[in-house]
Image 1 (tube, one colour):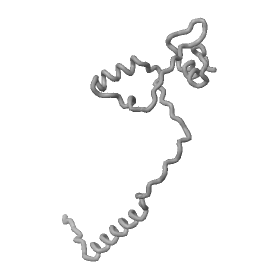
Image 2 (cartoon, rainbow, N blue to C red):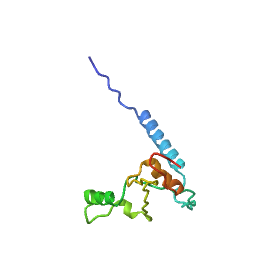
Image 3 (cartoon, rainbow, N blue to C red):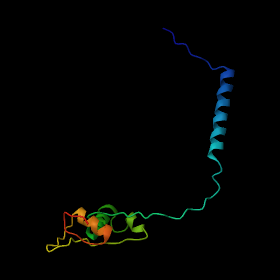
Image 4 (cartoon, rainbow, N blue to C red):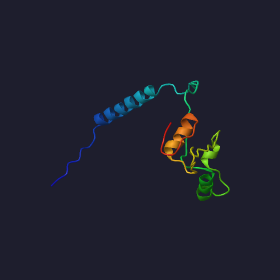
Length: 118
């Protein structure tokens, strides 16, 4: 059994080089002028990152476990940090708030009892 190898001809090499040149030119033109700096558009939204169930103790545990005492957590570089107490309302105000009551406290600023929203 013989294997036939095709030796590229001069014509096919020139055609391949021309195709590569055309492709490079198309990519350069499509890229456009990236040297122009566009003015940033003003922000229209706010993104709130909520660590549901995460308090100071959890942040401290993450600090010690992943970063030690000499390195800071990436979340410490954020410009604003806040803490919110969402202990549920009612005669038996529970220290552990479920997600529904906690989300209500976040959304409308009013506490409710566990198991309820609004």
